[in-house]
Amino acid sequence: MIRHITRRTVLRGIGVAGIGAGGLALFPPGATAAPLTRVLVFSKTAGFRHDSIPAGIAAIRRLGSENAFAVDATENANAFTTQNLAQYQAVIWLSTTGDVLNATQQAAFESYVDGGGGYVGVHAAADTEYDWAWYGGCVGAYFASHPAQQQASLVVEDRTNDSTAHLPATWSRFDEWYNYRTNPRGGVNVLMRLDESTYSGGTMGSDHPITWWHDVGAGRAWYTGLGHTIESYSDPNFTRTLLGGIRVAAKAVPADPGTGPVRTGVFYRLVAQHSGKLADISAASTAEGALLRQWSATGGLNQQFDFLDSGGGYYRIRARHSGMVLQVANPSSGADIGQQPDANTASQQWRVVDRGSGVVSLVNRQSGLAMDVWGVSTADGARISQWTSTDATNQCFQLQRV
Image (cartoon, rainbow, N blue to C red; front, side, top):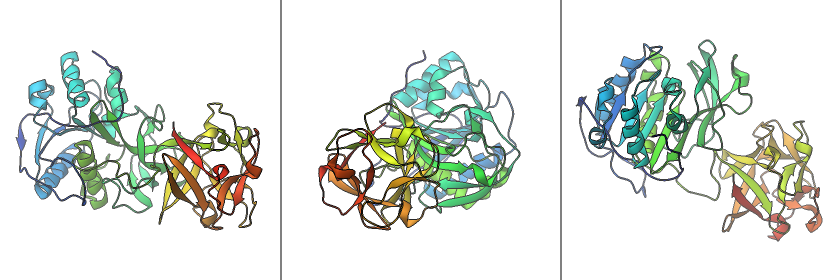
């Protein structure tokens, strides 16, 4: 019954007793998606029960009324049949806990999502069905622990997704902050991460995803660790995030607008076109100032980078192994490029110039100079610096998604 999850595809239906409206919400121009018409909220608990569940159901019903889609709510696992699920575009697992479905019901839900249905996981949905491997892949990561509820800052990595486009680049809020057993990045598209320096009790370090989406078979999953408190469901920023997550999972809006050659929330290798070698933080150092060079592929995390949106078409480029971003030492031609803590300064921001077929040039915002393998060298260890843009192959990098 447990099948391996594949990535990239579509979402559709599911059902039980409900409340309704039905119809079409307003979407961005050019969005090619089916109207959102009906969703199911599932809030069964076999472990800890959150007192925010009634507020969550009421908030989702309110979103449905305001945006012309019907909302059914149940805690009856018998709703998980192939026939019943087919009427829904997404199923919202609202702070479910423990083992809530039997094997037959699990198989029906797998078939639903793999066949194009939508999964929305809220908060304790990650504290659910630990022995169901397919579900673990669908939600993205299982709950591990949490500190006391407190204020914290979230870094919004992708401000193009419908669930995060309304948010500021840094969002401060009060909630219960989950640590996860594994880091889902690499298997999902991260939308927001926690800044562990802004609260106590985080265990995941500089890369702590908290909201993400990914494709599961022909369906789509969206999850957020937010939503523990009753007050969350009267917070306009959070309820708009939740609405966007429902739309994304239901494929009522595009999850990835595809407006440029890079996407936030995923990792890439940067392959120099003249040499076939990879951008690499020297010796996998985690020290501030460690230099960027080219090296043969090793499979190391020091050869993997993701792009953090700084706005205005500029991105910071973050090394996966250290959590630090690439920064030019000074504005002059030939200046070294190394890793430094993320301060979102102009020296850390890069414009991605699309050269076609997944090849880009990277131009520093402070200097206007392009990332360049020194002297067109093809040797391991050749330093990567900045130089006047020439469009030469030693300034062009293939984006190889991890």
